[in-house]
Length: 352
Image (tube, rainbow, N blue to C red; front, side, top):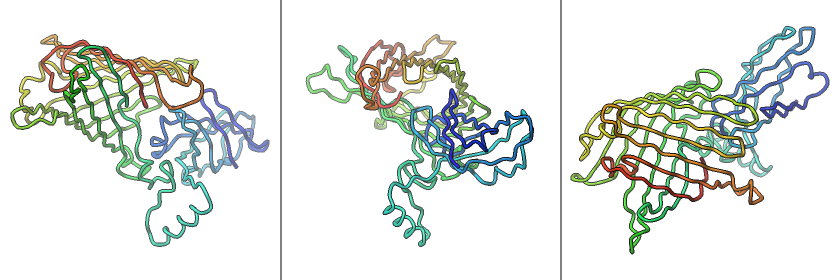
């Protein structure tokens, strides 16, 4: 039995015998998030108890627009019946995707030797590429004068192919490059490298807590290296505003550990906390703000991002966004942690 669920609103295709129980799905943020499991609620809208006939698979659309097929975790379906007006809570996860009979034969052959098989990048939980997901925005932008170009690459990865607590463990990497196009030779002026490891735990619908460790470095030598090592705690709360609009608020705080290279007073400019906020319409505009600083020294920075899907005005989905970025304050590049700048740039983004 198969169901198609889109939310919001929810669209369900079911056989008449099963129409009394209506499945509701809260779409995961991405295929990678679906690896750790998705809650599905079967609502009894009838006037009599109804037996649970859990669909083996459910189709839905992730928040990033990816079409997903979810499969039932059988151990969660041990429910006899649902009372009138009640519901049963089931658990689903991303289903394996096999593209052809040839790939099924190859997978079966390898499986007999005990080797884990990744049928596609978004395939089984053991598929390596399926454990990757977007993290911070991936973009390239350019501005006038000494703003130059700014390029950022970022991803998160789930090390363990698990649907249990181990699925909350993530590692992330972000690299931000500043390209001085205003100079004749166009050198790379600065680069910031930012690996991190964290545990990201869902608390309830729309709320997540993360605790982690992050290292930021400019990659300099002994005399010029600027480094930040910090443990952080971050909360993220999402609010559905209706008509496809969503608001996200993400406060975080941290404390420093270890040495800081040539930046022994970096806490004067970076402070001990930050606030991220964004508002977006699905398949529409998104505005995001990230601000950090030290209220004692009154030094800090703010960065604003604006993006809009190119498909909305160019026709055809090429998977890119028109992207604008503006920065004001200290430390856009880690090497400039104690220097104030104001820059604005525009370009393209792969993720936002």
